[in-house]
Length: 71
Image (cartoon, rainbow, N blue to C red; front, top):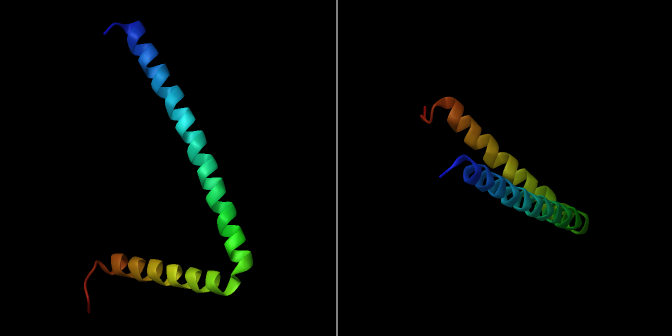
């Protein structure tokens, strides 16, 4: 493969990546908006979910920091 073909191939890959990034950004924004709507409609459920996620992350972090060993 000569240099020109390689450059065109890289440029094409970059353009495709940029398109996919834009799709992902839109999808992420849509998910964020859906989460906001859910939280406004269901504040109690959202609080319980957030508490559960926080507890799970805290437990996982404690496990990792302890080295995975039980005392």
